[in-house]
Image (cartoon, rainbow, N blue to C red; front, side, top):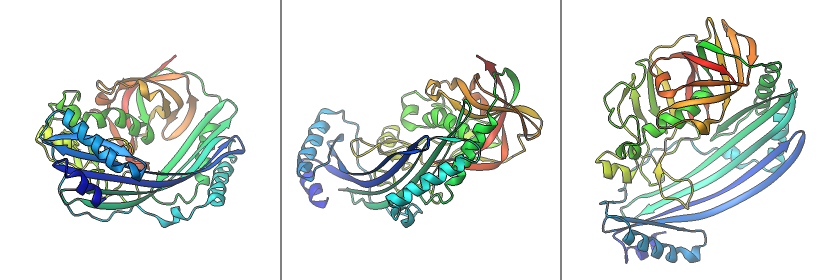
Length: 420
């Protein structure tokens, strides 16, 4: 990589090479049959150069094409706008819990056995519909001409099960950077939800609504995360663009971006530009404190780089992304006290208006409850509301759940479910 940097500096003011290699193993079932067992490997690199404040990007997946990619990046930079851009500088990194050697040791026989375990869990209450177990090992290397040298090896494991009971299908999943040890529990939870959903009908309800932490996590991802994106704020595409220092949520609630949580899938020591990551309070006691930035958006906004420049793969230049999103609370309660409608699973998240926060989403699994006891399942209805309004007036449950890169509680609010 150093030789490529030297070659690039003959034509550019600054240069960066981002290299990513990985291998993955996946097993998938359809009904009770193992349908897929495959191993994949990938290697590639992206190159970024700066010429007179202009940035250019290209990539390659054949080492013989490395210099051609650099030439293409230089050409791209010369055609782009002068944004006074500069690559990140040398920094130190903290060690994070992102690599579990047990994940590396899983072979074809082991992954099939774990998939079969999820199916065993499902059968406690229902029949297997679909499922998969996957493991991945990735190594990322970043070098640039400003002294950045960072390498990190990461593992990831995902397990998913879908269960069917009569005409009801339910799912459950887990994802972690470490070994997910009791995968049968994933199948059990999917099967139990399917069983409890039998006999569900349509429902109209106005009043107390409780949404599952997984549902909250997706609603936050689709609306709040884009709202705290520094580039969206700079372009006026965030509803919170002018709201630094203002209240945007209930004072009970804070929102953090935390890449330090051991084994969480969003945990990492550095972003994909080689900038050290750090825990950030974005909303504190309801007040908006800061936006997320990568090096480009920070430069254009005159803000600090928060270390949130991540790539979708080596073929893409860095964009702004969150790490682990954490919802914390200064005041909690048992949100299942009294009577209300509990929303376990929704579908149609792509229909959310990410700018206004408005949504009308299909209820896949819902339950009327009274004092913590489910009394009636429902589906075939719509949950209607606005995410930004909900987080301004909600109650937060006593317990958090950790799902993928989201950590937070169930929340309760006054809302509306309408029968379709």
